[in-house]
Length: 236
Image (cartoon, rainbow, N blue to C red; front, top):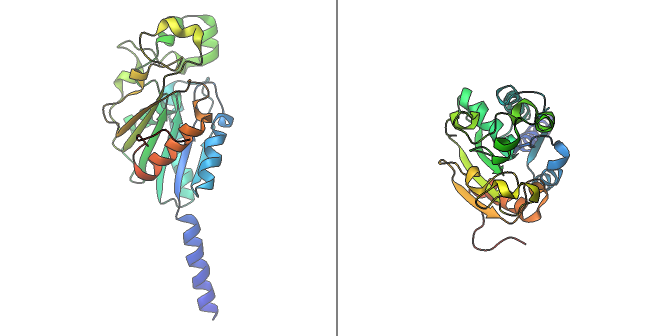
């Protein structure tokens, strides 16, 4: 009987640990609070969630990208079955920068990027030399321009499944004249796209609060579960 009880608890423990782990990476100048609604939704779906904090305004992108490796270790500590990432803005660039220097991890499967400036931002082009922009965005902000010398253009393709969500409703109208096409107020729709992306969807949301949108969170859940977004009708 004791042997059966011991085996039962070992089996139950393995079930607890056999979860998919989702790492959340917030954007530039934000905090874990900006990803809390996504965190709550994913917890309810039985994901193990690592809502990762990092000092986005204090270091360069290559330096900040080390947090990706730290997050993977946290998931490994909990014996995660698979590891996924959900990123907002700069968070997506950190994942790209990390895997630009490290081999693909066998447990990493999917990433959902919200409003990532994968080809830079026109806002950076215009204001990167301004004192207030340097103060607000730090070293990382200087590396996110659209010009050929921008760090984002030197990053190699990701090898796992990438789903990209781009906003087309500006929440920053004061930057409207900087863009020629659809944008979310800080990043153009075209800039978010990657050649290796598995799926892409455009939503009627602005950059800053995209991660709070219920419809966006449902799209995140869909991609994590299936590797695809919901295109037939916008989730309510």
